[in-house]
Image (cartoon, rainbow, N blue to C red; front, side, top):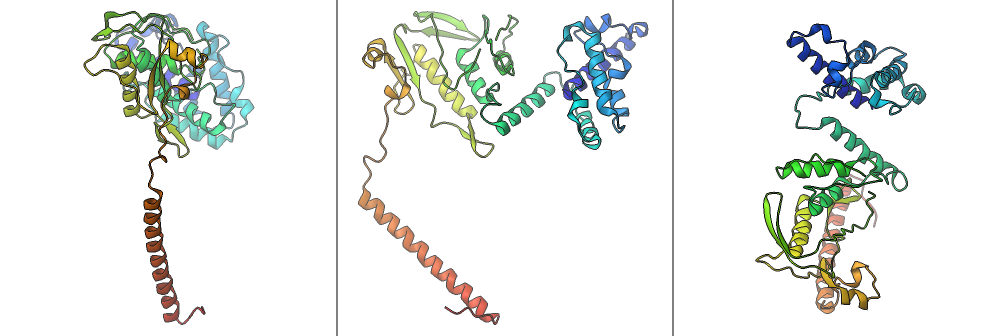
Length: 346
């Protein structure tokens, strides 16, 4: 919340400086000349510079709450969006709150317009909260790598993204970033959807067709009555010690496989054990219409072709070497204590 206040204030000061540079000083206290540029108008007591000057006072929590209330009062679009007396009710130690203000004060939110600094800070703390609280508290947050994967697979160049349980809104952000990364532009309306642990992409248009997708021309094959199953459990890289996330390489492999399955390409799609399988309607019917991926994707029994006698001989040799090394270390340790005059009796 404070980083958003800093961002709003930085945009306000930027707009204010522009008005002065254009010789429009008489308009610098008029809200309309800020709102017209999608900038919130801030009164003196709700500006970041004012809060920083007062940051060491005992009533800083109250001053922050007053600033938020004033911002909401002067900007109709924020009506009901900001909590009342939030920082006063937290009861934070004044020195800690002042330290937080100083830290946020070092962030230049307008230095690079292409970098969403506030969004990154928000995403960072949200992910930390989700990891810290675990199941039950972080359900509104979908990990960034998962959302990136979804965006790369559905390729939202056009149409509407419907997400009625958007949570933190990460799907919207990554969809826009996808368009920007592929040199496109998206101005359509966004709505909001729940993203479950299992990802299902339902496409009603599976007819053979050729069309432009972004900057690429694709020949889609007929895919009626077919389902592509993918098992991604073996993929991922370590994240925050005990977690796993998809790497850029993982996302590239997954999406290229998906798009290869959809289209007619020089390298034909192939079923890969423990990764993907293209099932026909008849195959699904034989499985009593169960859509559990493991019922279709081939499982590789890695123990099936193991030469256990050879394996045990290798383990025997390894353990023999370990025991020899342990004995050598033991003798060296006993010798050191004896040399120091503290011989250890065996």
